[in-house]
Image 1: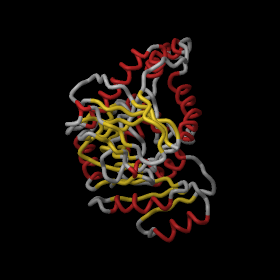
Image 2: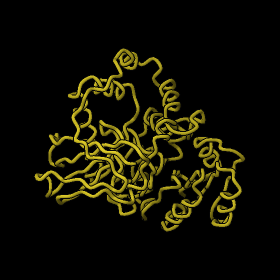
Image 3: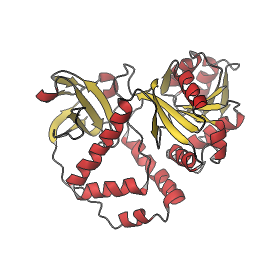
Length: 356
């Protein structure tokens, strides 16, 4: 059996699609929806939408946090495998069947994730999830000192993404996104439990994946299983991550030597050359470099180092940003670049643009 866990917080209108995608799978599943919203409107919608015999509703009187909500459902679940699904995500059948088979064929796989798209058209690809660590922070600090280090670090990120986006076979990774991930129950138990409830929101999944690896389990990305995550980017989410990030580092890397070294490096940002692509109130369009018109990789990121970055493979002389994805972006400053997928290093100057 597969136990599917969905946590709701002001997202009840999205959950019907998520649950429907699960039930379209030809699998034995049990579904848990944990409501952290505690408003009458959300609860009424959940009660009226889902059959109590098919969906287990857990209603909290207040927002207890994502980690604790998942643990509530996990403690009541019976499945050999646990599938965590964000309310704004959905699977493309037979995603769950593919992941379950892979887990059964790979006994030391503790966790596995499908290829993840941002849009319903399934054209924008989510990136490899870098595991937060003192080493990654050290690289970022070096990137702030010198544009050359920043360029190398950024190209390294692109190479890792391409390894996932162009693979037709499972890829062993160190970290996954917790929004669409399957876990082995026995591995969770060996790693000390599902989520550390000190993480109210964010970094609880990074903590779990690190514990799984330390318990001797491997983590995989399976590209022929597919799902969509209609993620809405907001600067507020980045701000909310700060506290959880500090807790994560105190828990796992409080005395790490490289972290202590990084503390002495300046937080300056080295000058990088960008092409200003303007300010937009509608989906932007960009001219593709002539030499790439036969095939290019377009990347979008809120970060100037393109870590993380979303990828799109295309052809032609003009790239027009998806209106669907455009409406998922908060107002702010963003970065994009075009590159040749056949070459590791790109010489094209990145674009900087703004949404208003």
